Image (cartoon, rainbow, N blue to C red; front, side):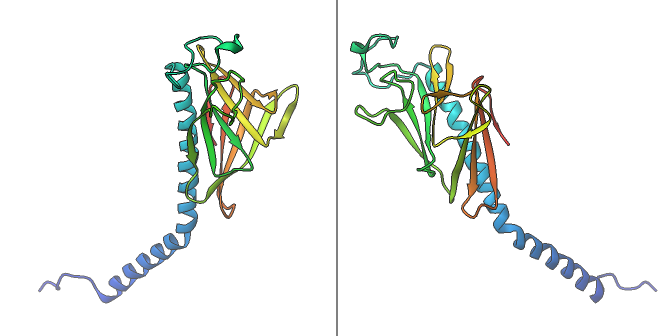
Length: 199
């Protein structure tokens, strides 16, 4: 005579216990996991913003059809220019935003005077902020200098990449993003060769 098929009460209790342990571990780690996802998303968005800015410069994007159609920045009487280089600007004192700008005044730096150079203001979401910017240059800051603001400009037609802060050029920079409680952070590295990496 064959025994009836099914689960015993002990097997059901063991399976429910295992599921409860796994669920509790997942719930315990969920806040950190969600912060990690948010920081990674913002780091990826920042890397995409660099690529978007680079494509604006390579595609010779028109800034304003009323500006001068002069391809060079050597005549101050022909400013602002219609087809400028494009860049990104960061300020540590404003850690929730950064700007894509067109260098219409050919200053090779972001200027928020009239006419306004900002093309797009990008908000960092999910209580994520950038908390530190470090610049590296063999002659000035071999071990890294803390920067209070930063401009990365793609100058056409190359585009040549200029990484500047307060009049000093850098070979590469690191932008650090972190969650509001500081538990999770990511670093975005931008080099003057155009390489962008997330670490």
